[in-house]
Amino acid sequence: MPPENAANMFRVLETDQVIDSFTRTMLGSSINARVLSFRCREAQEQSLPNQDYATVSYCKDGSSLIFCICDGVGSSYKGDFAACCLASYLVKWLQALPARQERPTRLDAALQEQLDRLAPVAQGQLIKLEMPDDTPALVREVLEDLCRDYGSEAVFLCGRLDYEMSVDGRPGQLSDALFCWMGNVTARLFLDSQQSISLGEKTDKNGRWSTRRGCRGELHTWSRSLPALERLVIHTDGLDEIGTSLATLDDDALLAEIQHLLTLPKSDDMTLLDLYWQDDVYEAEVNWR
Image (cartoon, rainbow, N blue to C red):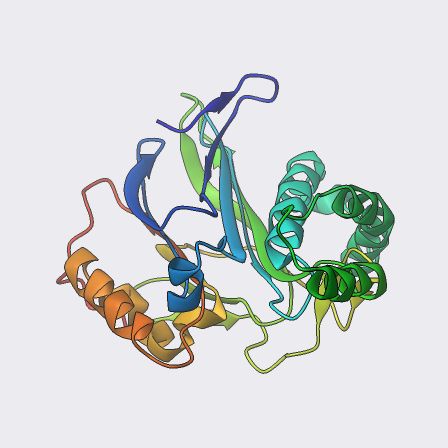
């Protein structure tokens, strides 16, 4: 079971950046979760960490669900650091966010201000990280310059789902769906098996958060009262090639596709968060388009 955070009555599920894994679990009584985290072929061969990081935080009474997937920028210094640091901060920020009617009018501007404030704190932590003792002097010099000039960078997509509670204390109607993103992490919301909404900026190669420079590019927020949400699929760009079919793949087919992607020359780290609202266990024959 995911570890419990007794302070705020949330439970947390997160990926491990040094282990390739695929997990299916239940979040509460009605949410099936598939969480996949695989390093690219190069990272596996060189025992490097996953640049992606995903975390889910859900209230035990079912009143809210919070999630975040970050993808560290490979050309930055220790992109895995930015991914983990940023995701942890965003989840805490979403947990503390007031109800929709009490939120700032310009939520994107409020979030950008928070992330710009976080940057110098995170940069200070990054600088304190030690390099391996056997790092060649020339490589060390280049990495130190990269750390100083660019810092650690990541793109992200995060969100919070709030539910109305019934008189008997059970989760009821979805009351609010909030999503925030910067860069090319992708989400697909299935209202039912026929209707879906796509979020994220697949072609945005410049938007990112940096420990050195704060927010770079456009930050997006999207908040709606949805009639229903039956499935939510979020993935990093390492899965773009099969992104439109992720909801149709059962576990065996999904893992077979991952093995194929690992053989490609441009193999990238791959992270998937697939949430499916149903009392029964997921059935592969459901026709998700």
